[in-house]
Length: 460
Image 1 (tube, rainbow, N blue to C red):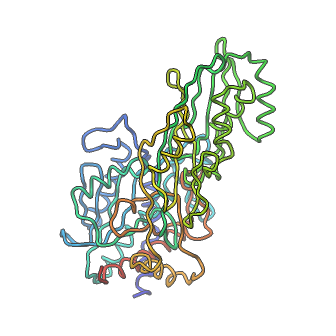
Image 2: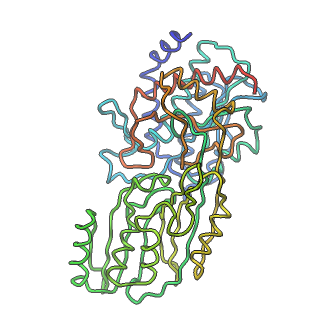
Image 3: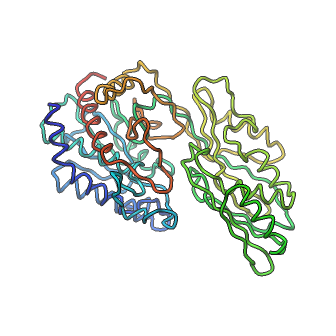
């Protein structure tokens, strides 16, 4: 059977690659402006879903859509108990000016495919789809049918997958191909928080930075009343000292300053350069503004929550991480939104209480949150998938992972994140020049085939 599986994957190799490129070409970032009936997440997500629906029908797969929120591809036309694989088709935004090539014009170079979604999550989605095709082609017997479930709003609020499970039963067991191998048995909780500070500056008239709460902000700008000549020298000295790029220009009678950072996944803020925090630090040094002082002293070069009292280092399940991601002025207030990831053993209400206590004179609240997820290493779902990875790769050294990245596992029964990045692979999810090594997509598909066969033929 192993030989037949490898032969099938080799047969589908070029088709798989073509499919991934075609799917990446569709900009499926959620678009609130074009959202409507049967396209709740906008035109791009709808188009990407239609691509998978048309492809599945054309290739004889069983597919069903759920009003643009989600779709599923099944090995059996029934509502029986099933094994699930959960992926998402939406992506985070990308700035074409910063990539080596347009993020939605996939580039194949040196064994890699570049493009938004190649790692997160279109690459793994294609690997799972072809895993189902191989199982179907080889007529592999399964005691339980399999469903590939594809959601449309994982990067925002999970609305798509929640809609799906409001209309369908939960799986007996599942994995989501949306993180890394050998598997995530400890997934941190996520809290989206907002800090509001009273702000009445005679100098700082505008401040904006960041667009997406789960991405390290790569651009921030402020308009100030100081003269251009007065600002230029200290600003360019600041840029040089911190190895940053930025600009300073006249804005009528005022001066506009901007700083460029480097984006990264919100769960790994140390991998990025936070433009919002660097701009706040510069303005604090320049003007001694109290709000800029508070932001700088509590968040600059601080990603583990220690300064604001939410990193209990005694916990065995990992540390806190904070990404101060969106900043803006609203009337007489300065708002800072942040993406907080916290380990098993803490709760979002505890986070809210401690941060509110720390900023006692200001307002802090949690906008939305999901709690941590933990499965013991010897649990059936973990041991089944972990052993499959080991058997297919010969890698018995890599350990199960604690991850700050939130996935559909949080809302799916008996589910962990499993793949698609391999140990040692570069993490470019949400980053500039996202890319995936093609050979790793093929290996993902092979692992997923064996995992699904094993899951589909054992009791749960």
